[in-house]
Figure 1 (tube, rainbow, N blue to C red):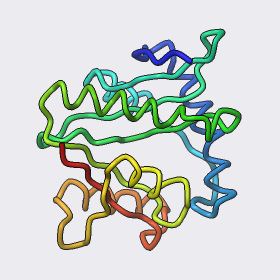
Figure 2 (figure 1 turned 45 degrees about the vertical axis):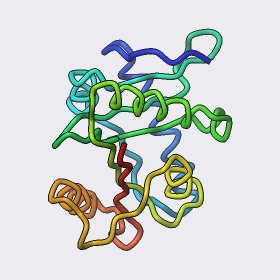
Figure 3 (figure 1 turned 120 degrees about the vertical axis):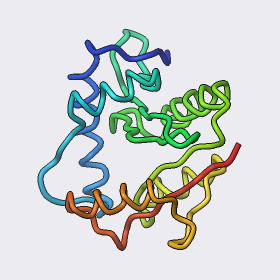
Length: 167
């Protein structure tokens, strides 16, 4: 497996991975309704920040990706997906570790993300990498806005959680 910076030429493949991974989340009860994927604008934001990595199989085909941006001195992980055929094989861990290493190199204070609190392969996975859940009274305004936007998109706010890792 190779992890490399993504390019705009990868966007369609990244969306296909995201849509496939959506079904894993649906099966776990984390999402419902129509599957959706990141827009060009969202992916471009990660790319503009130099924080969009793709994992490729031996033939060079994308199998997963992780994207984020720096805000208020923290890396915010905006999206991470691994194609279901490659899940539970360390791809997500390697992708996230690569972005965290880049954020450390840029002297970020840490990293944040939002995820489903109930799916066993989401919040516990991030906790295994040092992220901790934030209580409501600890939420920075930026994370509260993200959680509110997720609720407006139809994600169940009772299932969502913000997490933080301080470097």
